[in-house]
Length: 81
Figure 1 (spheres, rainbow, N blue to C red):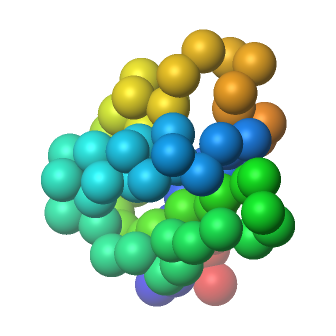
Figure 2 (tube, rainbow, N blue to C red; figure 1 turned 30 degrees about the horizontal axis):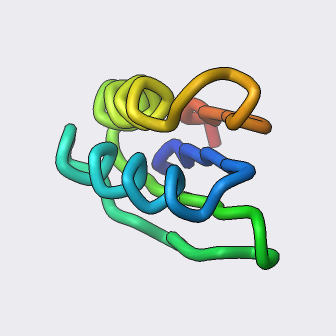
């Protein structure tokens, strides 16, 4: 069975670092990529069980700052084979 993938992206590297740390500590998720993708954008990709990914997404959004500083977020649920 495939595991869901969570993704958060920020317009600020500093906010991305803080939020990525918080989301990784929130639940049992494994990070796939946590890094700047341009000089002013930061992305976090992580995987785990559905509820853990959702909890980490919520925490990352909470810590990541106001909506203007968040450009996108996604949670891809399990798909049947």
